[in-house]
Image (cartoon, rainbow, N blue to C red; front, side, top):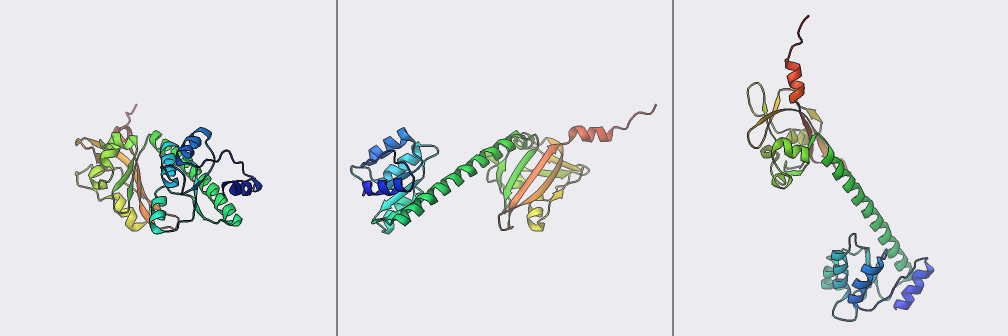
Length: 252
């Protein structure tokens, strides 16, 4: 079976870097050779079956290569165990060359797409961390699911302390003129679906009670279908600008 698979894959233009028949060797050779894809039979010689070997590869190798399982077992228990390894495809024995080609091509496509998404996520996270403005994102229920370092400094909340907290606990706003609470801006944009800007009469109350004048806007977050899934708030310390505005220029 392994030799036949190797010939089929070679005819499709793929290079077979190694063939092993135990789970232990599969893990060892994957780490050594760093293949672009692993075609793994669920049933292997030795104490480590294909599912356990795939799990070890996924844990030890970052990013792990895509795994395509080859199996003649379609029972629910086996598929449930295999699912924890997040395989990219299944091929049922005896295999059809067309199914083999489709599974391998799909696995490569999905793997490359996931790598691009991870790269974009790293770039976005780095960009948000480096911004001088505070950024807080919430889910639709108004719970914080992201806060960048600038927002940590302005609110007095760390990322892990703020995560999952209601926005109204982390981002407390009052009017400067009378210290009355300002309604939750995230809830407002989720309800109205529009970007809003707070006026210049806004103070942010840090966790320790310190007051900071801020400029802020809030916008809805939408998914691919246009549904609102949360809100993002972008704000900055406006102390310097407010002081400049309140000092009248001297006349000659």
